[in-house]
Length: 88
Image 1: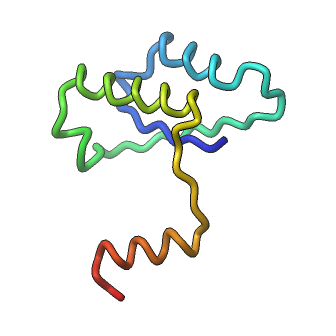
Image 2: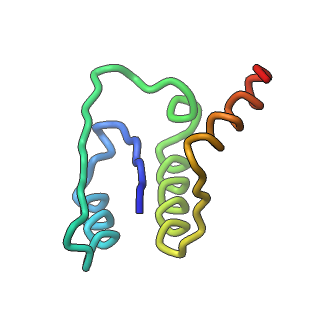
């Protein structure tokens, strides 16, 4: 399982940590990476309220727990990203 959670530092709470622990419970060889950036995120984080963000995060974690995920190879991603930018 791979998951990337992007949050603002103010949203790094004990509740979030407990949810992450629940996701990896029973998976002894799980690895967690924490990256700290000093710049504000551009994009959706600026366009949504705190409540909207946490609702989106909760839905993403629920989808992950239920196995509602999409996976693809690096080559497939590259083709898709070229399609999005119309570079083909």
